[in-house]
Image (cartoon, rainbow, N blue to C red):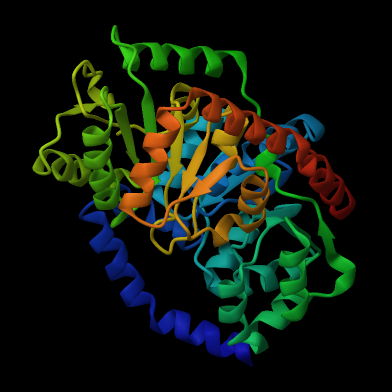
Amino acid sequence: MARLIYSVLFYLLLPLIILRLLFRGLKSSGYRSRWAERFGLVASTADKRIIWLHAVSVGETLAAAPLVRALQEQYPQHRLLVTCMTPTGSERIQAVFGDSVEHCYAPYDMPDALSRFLATVNPEILIIMETELWPNTIAACHKRNIPVVLANARLSQKSALGYSRVKPLVKPMLESMTAVVAQHHDDGARFIDLGLPDSVLSISGNIKFDLTLDAPLKQYAQQLGTQWRGAEGRLIWLAASTHRGEDEIILQAMSQIKAGMEVPPLLVLVPRHPERFDQVAELCTSAGYTLARHSKADATAGVDILLGDTMGELMAFYGACDIAFVGGSLVPTGGHNMIEPAAWGVPILTGPHLFNFAEASRLLLEAEAMQVCDNADSLAQHCIDLLNNQQQRQTMGDAGVNVAEDNRGALDRLLAVIANSL
């Protein structure tokens, strides 16, 4: 009954969903195209054995990259269909995987759209990254005996509280899961409290620790660092994946850093969402900073800020900087992936909102590889202290590398669960 009510509400809200697509399409043209896919009308894969992997957006897509490559190696007779919900996620899928995978948007969680999609695709398994749970999608797969694995699963206290308010809808959904492979015991316990059977839960760790820094990436990062430092050899601090409301704090901190250092560093500022690139550029220039744009290959000599206004280069940016602030953490977004700078051996700064990476942040804080900043003043002071102390940067960076290396292995544990589920 709960799922029936949910489905009726979804159909009633469909006009608002379409209006939202149109509104978002005013800023990002990707939201105005490929609507048919969102209603389950996709190209036929009848001649292929399909493993369906769903990664809602950019972060999940990047986290899925090692998994996709491992599945391609272990199941060469299958094709992977990688779906997402956003244009930026779609761009990343196509940029990272190219023609090596099938790709489309995932259908909306409506019975008719799912029926069309599953009849056309006929996947042998659905692997969902992290916590993208849709009741009708899971029910439709369960009805067709399609195994559903929730991979690298995480569930914050805040999200668990939200799910608990609709437990009659959530509990049957969790009971239909084939396997939930959680990042940490705390995540697993929250799933159990919501109704997940103990028998389908396993704990793997976070597969984001299983990233690889290959030689071409290292070479490109070194090239960027040399280019950005210029003849004067300036230090570089990176503000990565920033959200609305954070950029202002970062610019306030930059003002204090410029006043407090004899040779101010170059700030490389990378907004999380591409539709905000121009807005953040205007914010920087309005605040009186000189600005270069990475997309235009602008020279950085004598410039205060380099705007990282391209997609897919953040990993290399981490390798090019001296310290990294990881965004989504000064505002209550929950933080973004601080494992990436840790793997590079870069000292990490964040804000206090870290619930999306609760276990990774705990490990890095305990190892003293990361410092938390509450506001512009503390961010500026931490930056100044680190930029003036090469030995502390080295110590924090080494601690981050140790954490990253010590926590590898989640991918192999996940792959074993998938093998048992197929």
